[in-house]
Amino acid sequence: MRDVAANPPRRLTAASMEHAFVRLNQALVVALMGSMALLVFLNVVTRYVFNHSIIWVEELTQYEMIWVAYLGAGLALREGRHVAVDTLQDLLPALPRKLLRTLIAIALAVFLLVLTVLGFQIVAFTWNQETPVLNVPTGLPYLAVPLGAAAFLLHLLLFWRAFVERQFEHADDPAGEHDDEQHIIEGDRDRDRNAQGDCGPLRRAFRERSGRGHRRCTHVRASVLARYQRAVAASPCSSRKGGFQPSSRRIRELST
Image (spheres, rainbow, N blue to C red):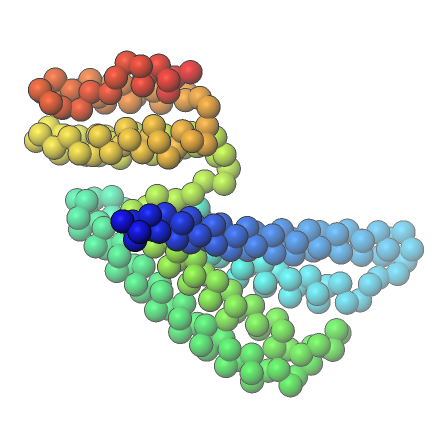
């Protein structure tokens, strides 16, 4: 009994640590991007207004761009923004698709691990050299490679299950409406399973939609709700005794 009671705090702690890690990563990227914009703007003003250029701005902003690229790669993974050809994955059934995604995640993790090790080696090799303008160790720009790869690997490990299931985060959709549409689409893909009498996917889609997604939003778009209701009505699960039938009260709660 004590073990069961002790598990939720550990899960909450792990979730809060992951949230803090993501926020820190985002803050670093924002700070680097903001300083780049400010320095470039300041350099343009001094060059054309005061006829004086800040010579170290160009080199510094180039190095900052490298850091932004590597530190932002893990965040892009969480939102599914990396270029990918997923035509084959879409043609596969659920189980082979999941196995393929798992193999992709393993290959990606191995690559990032190797990149981290080799990155630290190149940093050690170039640390005694100096950059042309700033006269700082050349290893500082190269340090973005191993640290960025390590952060990317940590993002992948924390996001492993969601990556395999292609449940990406959406920073540009704070209301969670994309999650609703994604659950409906996944429910449509599992229509064949419903026709065979398996109500699990439809039940899970409704539960996730009414729980995790709607803790973050206060309304549901009418089109999304209409698609969901049509999916329920079209499924034999809604008419079979003991099948999945969400109450009208729950539907009204989700539509308000």
